[in-house]
Length: 503
Image (cartoon, rainbow, N blue to C red):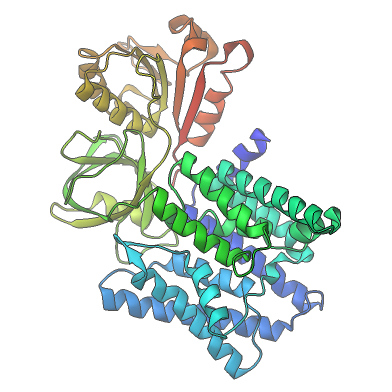
């Protein structure tokens, strides 16, 4: 299973989370149109096409109008995702009146992103809210026809790709288990055949689509694992509990959105003023920015940054960055690698940012943080740009005068590619930090290690690995290969991983 997930991660490495979701939904839409064209789906293909074009046009135009009204940039990927979800869940329309009502639902979804907000972020999943209001106002019913068995194979495949990209395995697994167990309990308590209930839920229901596509929506779901599990459990319970008014996919998700707002109140959207962008290693650029207000986060977490720019490509204007600075530093540091060929329009815009440019970050999250045990020995393994969360952790240890033992294996192609090496060298003078740089190609005067991190190299420096908390950060292939070194008798106390896609 891990090899399959690793292969899927490599497949989507050059795509953003939003674009993976868009392509996955487009695949489901295409299959639905093909099935309808051959008479297998039960809906006329012209009605499906008319509904698709209606939701695409209404959400696009209303989103454009809202962006112009509120002075923000239209997010094409986000609007497209909402449109495709509505197409797959609304009852298709085949009259002008029905299509007009569907257009109004598309507008509700777009407008909710701008009006129903708190601290700069929308509160509810836009598609779920539009489905709920559309049904309540009598515009169109939420049919969830994507749950047909004919679409289940493509839904399972594309859903797995989405979950692999978002890495929300625990959330989706928790929801699925709770929803199925609840369905079994309800069936047993009402003398309904359990196997029939499971068949309806899994084969003829939208459970897989809902879990992979809607439950995982990042802006309206919790950002840390502990709260994600509670959120998924609650939504799974409501989803299958057969409660009046509540046990529909869209209503259960809206309740989950409120739960997230209570247990993990979102911070205000972060306003950042650019101080500088500089190249700190070949092809590696660091942005330093001054937040408008103090930012609460934990060293090792990430944020989503928006960089509006003209002529944006299909990968959009948003990216996830591990924060390279600690909460105690005055400036925020974000670092990325920019390839010499085929760099995205986002990265071209990133390196051209000028001082005093105002940027916006939408949310902070992640569980790649230091263990609570202040005496736990740490083993860090970084590959290339994966050094960024470790810089934040080291800066945090410095400010706290934390002397827990840390061993850092820092792997790069050449010594010049070891960004932040000078920072770690200085930090080692005040911390119990040992740095082992490892390069693939070394000059004649190189005194560090060469090749790659291996079991032999780990054993030479860390004979008591089983006592350590291990953190691995880098490209997906590097993370997976390094993780495989820690197995059986070599197993440490804990392994935490973080990966950086190459978009």
